[in-house]
Image (cartoon, rainbow, N blue to C red):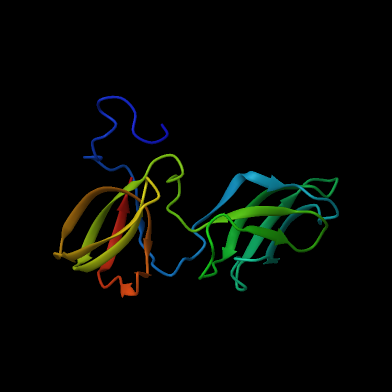
Length: 171
Protein backbone atom coordinates (compact mmCIF):
# COMPACT_ATOMS: atom_id res chain seq x y z
CA UNK A 1 0.00 0.00 0.00
CA UNK A 2 1.31 3.44 -0.85
CA UNK A 3 -0.01 6.32 1.23
CA UNK A 4 -3.55 6.58 2.50
CA UNK A 5 -6.02 4.58 0.43
CA UNK A 6 -9.54 3.38 1.13
CA UNK A 7 -11.65 3.81 4.27
CA UNK A 8 -9.49 1.75 6.62
CA UNK A 9 -6.05 2.94 5.48
CA UNK A 10 -6.22 6.30 7.24
CA UNK A 11 -6.30 4.61 10.66
CA UNK A 12 -3.04 4.13 12.50
CA UNK A 13 -1.99 0.55 13.22
CA UNK A 14 -3.42 -0.96 16.37
CA UNK A 15 -1.37 -4.16 16.50
CA UNK A 16 2.32 -4.62 15.79
CA UNK A 17 4.16 -7.54 14.25
CA UNK A 18 7.67 -6.14 14.57
CA UNK A 19 9.61 -3.43 16.38
CA UNK A 20 12.88 -1.62 15.70
CA UNK A 21 14.95 0.51 18.07
CA UNK A 22 14.70 4.18 17.10
CA UNK A 23 17.97 5.98 16.42
CA UNK A 24 18.15 9.73 15.85
CA UNK A 25 21.65 9.90 14.35
CA UNK A 26 20.67 9.39 10.67
CA UNK A 27 22.34 5.98 10.64
CA UNK A 28 22.00 3.71 7.65
CA UNK A 29 18.98 1.57 8.55
CA UNK A 30 18.73 -0.45 5.34
CA UNK A 31 19.91 -0.74 1.75
CA UNK A 32 17.47 -0.38 -1.13
CA UNK A 33 17.91 -3.62 -3.11
CA UNK A 34 15.86 -2.15 -5.98
CA UNK A 35 18.72 0.28 -6.68
CA UNK A 36 21.56 -2.27 -6.74
CA UNK A 37 23.93 -1.86 -9.67
CA UNK A 38 25.78 -5.15 -9.97
CA UNK A 39 29.04 -3.84 -11.38
CA UNK A 40 31.94 -6.07 -12.46
CA UNK A 41 35.28 -7.29 -11.11
CA UNK A 42 34.13 -8.17 -7.58
CA UNK A 43 35.56 -11.25 -5.84
CA UNK A 44 33.23 -14.24 -6.27
CA UNK A 45 31.64 -15.43 -3.01
CA UNK A 46 31.09 -13.24 0.05
CA UNK A 47 33.50 -10.49 1.04
CA UNK A 48 32.95 -8.81 4.41
CA UNK A 49 33.71 -5.26 5.50
CA UNK A 50 33.90 -3.71 2.02
CA UNK A 51 34.31 0.09 2.06
CA UNK A 52 31.76 2.42 0.49
CA UNK A 53 31.92 6.03 -0.60
CA UNK A 54 29.73 8.77 -2.02
CA UNK A 55 28.15 12.11 -1.23
CA UNK A 56 25.81 11.70 1.75
CA UNK A 57 27.22 8.25 2.56
CA UNK A 58 28.74 7.88 6.06
CA UNK A 59 32.51 7.31 5.94
CA UNK A 60 32.22 4.46 8.46
CA UNK A 61 29.69 2.46 6.39
CA UNK A 62 30.99 -0.92 5.27
CA UNK A 63 29.03 -3.71 3.60
CA UNK A 64 29.24 -7.44 3.03
CA UNK A 65 29.14 -8.17 -0.69
CA UNK A 66 28.14 -11.42 -2.37
CA UNK A 67 29.23 -11.78 -6.00
CA UNK A 68 28.64 -14.50 -8.58
CA UNK A 69 31.37 -16.34 -10.57
CA UNK A 70 31.33 -13.52 -13.15
CA UNK A 71 32.23 -10.96 -10.47
CA UNK A 72 28.79 -9.28 -10.47
CA UNK A 73 27.25 -8.29 -7.15
CA UNK A 74 24.21 -10.40 -6.27
CA UNK A 75 23.68 -9.23 -2.68
CA UNK A 76 24.73 -6.50 -0.25
CA UNK A 77 24.07 -6.15 3.51
CA UNK A 78 25.25 -3.60 6.08
CA UNK A 79 28.36 -4.73 7.98
CA UNK A 80 29.37 -1.61 9.94
CA UNK A 81 26.73 1.04 10.28
CA UNK A 82 27.56 4.65 9.62
CA UNK A 83 25.80 7.73 11.01
CA UNK A 84 24.91 11.14 9.56
CA UNK A 85 23.84 9.64 6.25
CA UNK A 86 21.52 11.33 3.77
CA UNK A 87 18.50 9.20 2.87
CA UNK A 88 18.59 7.96 -0.73
CA UNK A 89 22.30 8.66 -1.30
CA UNK A 90 24.21 6.30 -3.58
CA UNK A 91 26.93 4.23 -1.91
CA UNK A 92 29.67 3.26 -4.36
CA UNK A 93 30.98 -0.19 -3.42
CA UNK A 94 34.77 -0.66 -3.44
CA UNK A 95 36.50 -3.83 -4.70
CA UNK A 96 35.28 -3.75 -8.28
CA UNK A 97 33.88 -1.37 -10.87
CA UNK A 98 30.41 0.14 -11.09
CA UNK A 99 28.79 -1.49 -8.06
CA UNK A 100 26.49 0.73 -6.01
CA UNK A 101 23.33 0.77 -3.92
CA UNK A 102 21.23 3.49 -2.32
CA UNK A 103 21.29 3.87 1.47
CA UNK A 104 18.16 4.49 3.51
CA UNK A 105 18.10 6.30 6.86
CA UNK A 106 14.33 5.91 7.23
CA UNK A 107 12.63 2.98 8.96
CA UNK A 108 12.76 -0.23 6.93
CA UNK A 109 9.67 -0.51 4.74
CA UNK A 110 8.57 3.06 5.42
CA UNK A 111 8.86 3.87 1.73
CA UNK A 112 5.51 2.04 1.50
CA UNK A 113 4.01 2.70 4.93
CA UNK A 114 5.08 4.70 8.00
CA UNK A 115 5.37 3.32 11.54
CA UNK A 116 3.81 4.14 14.90
CA UNK A 117 6.13 5.12 17.73
CA UNK A 118 6.43 4.08 21.36
CA UNK A 119 8.22 6.62 23.57
CA UNK A 120 9.80 5.05 26.67
CA UNK A 121 11.22 8.20 28.25
CA UNK A 122 9.25 11.31 27.35
CA UNK A 123 10.30 14.59 25.82
CA UNK A 124 10.12 16.18 22.40
CA UNK A 125 10.00 13.99 19.28
CA UNK A 126 10.89 15.31 15.82
CA UNK A 127 9.63 13.13 12.97
CA UNK A 128 9.31 12.99 9.24
CA UNK A 129 5.81 11.75 8.53
CA UNK A 130 4.65 9.48 5.72
CA UNK A 131 3.54 12.62 3.82
CA UNK A 132 7.11 13.97 3.91
CA UNK A 133 6.24 16.77 6.35
CA UNK A 134 8.52 17.22 9.37
CA UNK A 135 6.92 18.07 12.71
CA UNK A 136 7.80 18.19 16.40
CA UNK A 137 5.62 16.58 19.07
CA UNK A 138 6.29 18.57 22.24
CA UNK A 139 6.15 17.17 25.77
CA UNK A 140 5.35 13.54 24.95
CA UNK A 141 4.83 11.61 28.21
CA UNK A 142 6.80 8.55 29.35
CA UNK A 143 5.28 5.32 28.04
CA UNK A 144 3.29 7.00 25.27
CA UNK A 145 2.28 5.62 21.90
CA UNK A 146 2.21 8.08 19.02
CA UNK A 147 -0.43 6.81 16.57
CA UNK A 148 1.26 8.45 13.60
CA UNK A 149 2.82 7.15 10.40
CA UNK A 150 6.47 8.17 10.73
CA UNK A 151 9.29 7.49 8.28
CA UNK A 152 12.12 8.75 10.48
CA UNK A 153 12.85 10.27 13.89
CA UNK A 154 15.24 13.21 13.57
CA UNK A 155 17.90 14.39 16.03
CA UNK A 156 16.55 17.91 15.66
CA UNK A 157 14.15 20.04 13.67
CA UNK A 158 14.28 23.81 13.35
CA UNK A 159 17.11 23.81 15.95
CA UNK A 160 14.94 22.01 18.53
CA UNK A 161 16.43 18.65 19.63
CA UNK A 162 14.59 15.38 20.05
CA UNK A 163 14.82 14.85 23.81
CA UNK A 164 12.70 11.69 24.17
CA UNK A 165 14.62 8.41 24.45
CA UNK A 166 14.07 4.64 24.56
CA UNK A 167 11.79 4.77 21.53
CA UNK A 168 10.55 1.90 19.37
CA UNK A 169 9.21 1.94 15.83
CA UNK A 170 6.19 -0.39 15.67
CA UNK A 171 5.25 -2.20 12.47
